[in-house]
Image 1 (tube, rainbow, N blue to C red):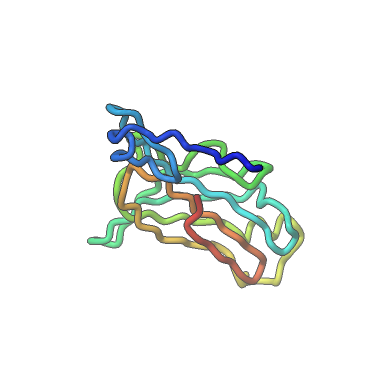
Image 2 (spheres, rainbow, N blue to C red):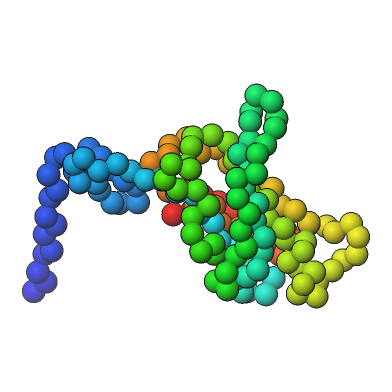
Length: 150
């Protein structure tokens, strides 16, 4: 006979303050949002190690943008720390620029000049500084895809 598992219910005040992805906050705790990414080289089935990523904060009103950070992905295709977190995480529109053309050229993949895919720009709106926004990039020399991950 199978035993039924019983889940312990959380106190009502814990359920009111969802932290996202099934996690709950204790009373008095503040949600700390973050922006993360990782890159997968789908042409070779490997992590996108060594890809330069530039993060910009964009102004919808003027069209201007300000460089926030430049990072290079590690051997796992991830950044060593979040692109944004804590006080640096401000509601707004951001652009992630993935320098995929340079990456594929270092791997010996080149289709001449100009490159078919060079700088991949993803413009994302971050509306809740308490959420975790994960923006993966799946990339090959001739295509890319993204989604909001977890």
